[in-house]
Image (tube, rainbow over all chains, first blue to last red; front, side, top):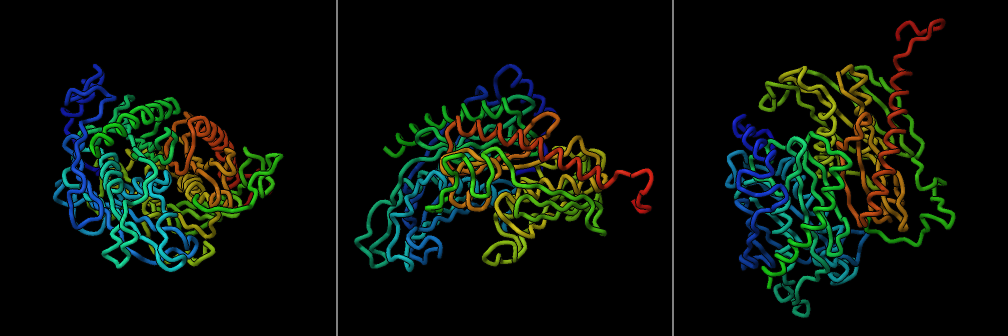
Length: 262
Length: 248
């Protein structure tokens, strides 16, 4: 996601507009792009969602299969999150095993889901120490116009929220039920351009920004995960602003998602 | 972060299992210039963590397509040695080490005057010899001393430390038990001259109040780590007038 050259004229244009409090697509610094999604769009997956955040598009699918638990958590289900930046989504993405950008992306989304306890893994034990439900979340960028962190978080959360445990498929019909979900972790990423913080950067904005901070909150507005990225720095005052807006926008986004799920 | 224990991590007097108060970091030992071949190196102990960092460069950038015609790039490899944890760690890079390498390089790139060395690469290698919670902070702390030891021009040195939460208390510099059975972990790194944040992660569960407390605790402690870093460099390069070592 890095090392993409943005022309000086575009950079100046973005910076000049920001000085006037607006952006190339007419948004204010704290506006996020429109969220749309189709959930359960993939029948072969146990849960799925295809999410658009402006022109950025991500699809996430959940596969739930029985498997062996980790030795230190014999009664807990297993969560695994992966992300791929496939060449279809942008000319700068190459095929092959996930690079550091894809790995960071997957791990930041994973942290929000895991640390918020969104999936109640204690409700996924089939036979203690032998068999538990393993929940694989795989995310693919389909169209990249900035802010894959928040778009992927949305796709993963919606896919999990609508996922069903495929009991019958594995001879365990008593397990046919929705995946146990406790809350919706929502990430809000702030990007720093010059000394201005903006939300939900598009491709050009993302590539002239010096630093970003992703903040994931739970339903109560408590902090569950954070990740600072980029070579720039953020001040303590800016950190406070990022936290405030993550709580505020997180609440709005959660309402939007609830409407989408219906 | 997800484990459960009956162990009391913070007693009624606010004392922790290793005898520290909430705002105390573990004993820190830093030595600069500990390896011969590397252009710069440092050894850091923070509690039971033992970490080596080495710097090569500025040198020709490999792979070449990563070269930047306007400045040097900082590349970092963070690696946990197989015997550094209680279960043997499978050698080689995993997703965790790739992520840590990435954010460490980004934090260092903030202070290195990269525009002095177009097309070059400054390579930082961090080896965790023994791990006991807080290795990414120990690694970054060591790496900045190693960069200074290599004579790389920087606008400041980066100290790093974590704050977190265990038994419901906000604590500085979690040890292994507190990290395993605690409720949150917030590693941060700052530029001490400006207090800008160059590395920040968080996982667990914290209210705004707890988080603010953790950040101010960690920022204060970063300044203490900074003093120890500077002291290590002074010890390495100070020349005593009378009985000075001839090779120093």
